[in-house]
Length: 183
Image 1: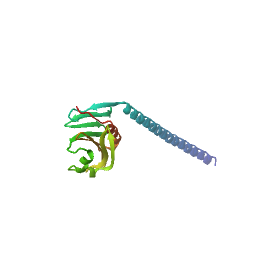
Image 2: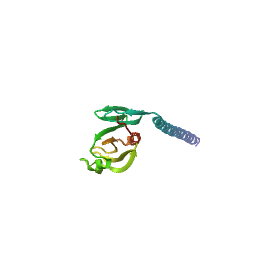
Image 3: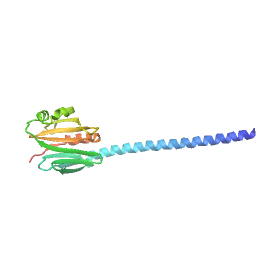
Image 4: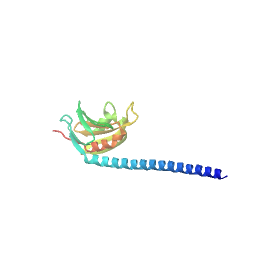
C-alpha cells in the first residue's frame, strides 16, 4: 500500500510539473504575441505620423502643368506623359487628356467611352478651385475596384487613380493636394 501511495505521489508531482511547464509556455507565448501586437501597432502609428511629416512636392513637366504633394515613401517618375507614384504597396498614376468640352460633367457623359456610366459611388468636389469628381470603377481582370479622381482645368482632364485599396487614402491625399500650374 505504501508503494502505491508513493507511485501516486510521483505521478501526481510529475503531472503537476508538466501542467506548470505547459502553462508557463502558453503564458509566455501569449505575452510575447501581445507585446509584438503592441509594438507593431505603435510602429504603424509612428510610420503614419512620419509619413504626414515627410511630404514632398512634385512639380510635373510643363507639358503636364500640375503639382502634387506626396509622402516620402513613394518614388515618382514621369514617363510618356504620365506620372507614376510607386511604393512597395503598388502605384498611383496621374495622366492628362485634352478635351473640347468646357466642363467635367460633359466630358464624362459625352466622351466616346461614356466614362460616367462606368463610375460607382460618384462624389462631386472642388480641388484647388477646380471642378472634380471621384468614384470607383470595375476593371476587367482585377478583383478590386479602381479608385479614380477626374480634375478639370482649362480644357484638360487630369485622371489620378490606383487599383490597390491599400493606396486609396494616399490617393485621396495626393488628389486633394493637386494644383494646376500653367505657364
